[in-house]
Structure formats: C-alpha cells, structure tokens
Length: 165
Image (cartoon, rainbow, N blue to C red; front, top):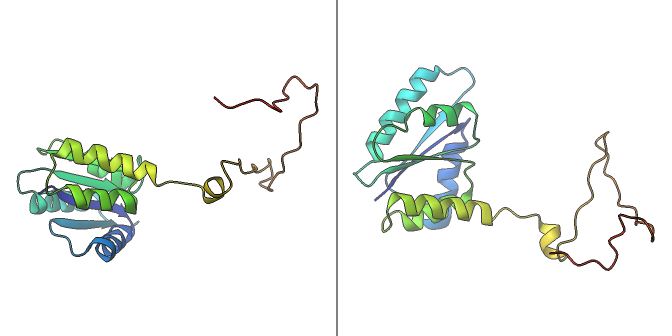
C-alpha cells in the first residue's frame, strides 16, 4: 500500500487526516507533519524523512502539502530523492479521498495522477454551477464588487448573440 505523509502550515495536516477518516474510515500508513512559525526547519525535514520511512512498505509514498512554494512544500521537495516518493502541493479533501481509495491497488504514478485530477475536478464556484456558467462580477481596483454594464450595440466588443467555443 502507498503511504501518505501530509506536511502543512499549522495543524492543517492533522485536521485533513481527521476529515479523511470521518469520510472513509480509519487509515493506515498515514502521518502528519505540522509546521509552526517558530519550528526548527531542519528538525521538521528530519520528521518528514522519518515519517516517509515509517509509512513506506515498498510501494512508495505520496507527500501532500498545502501550498506550492511554501515552507512545507519546499521541505517535502527536499526529500524527493528518497526512493519512490512523490510530492503533490495544494492538498484538498477530494484528493485525499481518491488517494485513500486507490492506494491499496494501484501503482504510485497512477495514484498520483488520479489524486491530482480529483483535486482539480472538485474545485468549483457554486454560482457558476447553479446558474449555468454565469460569470461572477469582478472586484474593482479598490476591492469593491463591480457590476457588469451591458455592452452597447454597435460596439466593436459587442458579443450579443455570439456563441462560446
């Protein structure tokens, strides 16, 4: 079975594991590394290495981080050379559920690809889904919510009656 190590800012990693187990039941070979602002980063890197070793039974390990470019992600990437290890940044619950359901039966590369796809698939804006793809208005330069003015007919930018490709 593919092991999982979640590495995040604050206690997010532990909370993700709690949420995952709430949805799919208890999990084995999964550990959290929670990184605080005052932590010794070399110590946290050693924790990641230790947890990777603890959850790896030979099928590989997926390290999941909260944000690419952040300290947790950078620390996780620094251990990529440790055998069959992959890092996915931008963890979310649908991604974890997909990993949990596939990691006993599929190889590392398949599990990682499916987890990434699930993570992207379930990011949605409710109003766009519920109202047939209507674009939300954008904030103006001061951050105030803007409104879309109708385009004048005859304007070169008039798209009335145009179809989307």
